[in-house]
Image (cartoon, rainbow, N blue to C red; front, side):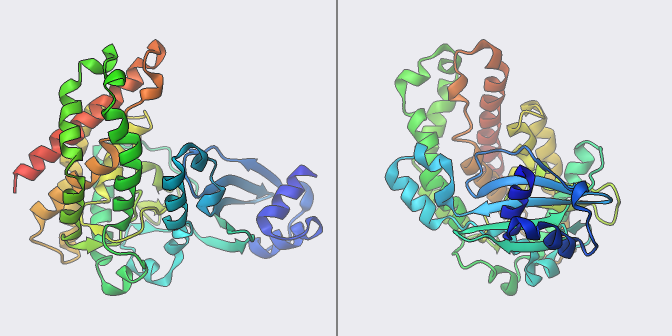
Length: 370
């Protein structure tokens, strides 16, 4: 009964119509006795995600994602009221559905594809359910060659996403998503703790006083950095192109299946490289010490991808756009302050410090090349 009720909610139909609705989506009669639904683990910090499930039966399987308005997100309660209200009003919660917009589909280059969207169900109260292809993934890992291939494909996609008809998918101005994040999340979660003398007097942090000082100095220039990025050539990015969102399908037909679009407003070329670089490091699956090698591989590969699509002569702009935007998004507020003093978490803590230090050094190096 619990499974039927959950499926009823995700399908937007009464319980006695679940089997018929599933049969219609699957395109084949379904035996209700074979239906299973299993929650899929995900990062609960995603403001627009209400849940993930794998729904399957005899010979079929679908992946279901529920999206909701940010006002339904529990995390709002932990934000200052004035920031929470603005955040909920401004964050576009249906962004991921843009992946199946015909203009976006036409912009995908060879080597990238979206999952098949079987059904978008309007659930009411600003909630929707996306019934998608359950992508069978290859067990291959992410080595330098795979990072470079992903960057190359992203470069080709970003070049095609500079077209006016693709930029028109977004109603927001250049740099809006990063600006909103930098002015709200970075101010609250990044610069606020960085200014705390008491917090940074802890032995784990005290030895990184130089990093703190440099980030605070640069933090005062965030409005200037954002304005500069907005003046660079713009593309409509994936927005969260981490390895976790570039699935490697086991059946071939594409190098990657792209999922979970985010930050979907025009941004400077190079923006998509940021999450590609930090995604697995942020998740604790790849050491921060690997970041120099990854960065050295993905930047030229991305430039090659742009070039194949006809966008050339922007090497320094891309390098600066990448280095600046990833620093703003991941360099200020990635410290694990909540585990300070927990010896069992010391390695994870140090990894995040190393990540922030590299992002700052990379910004200085790539910026100086101009």
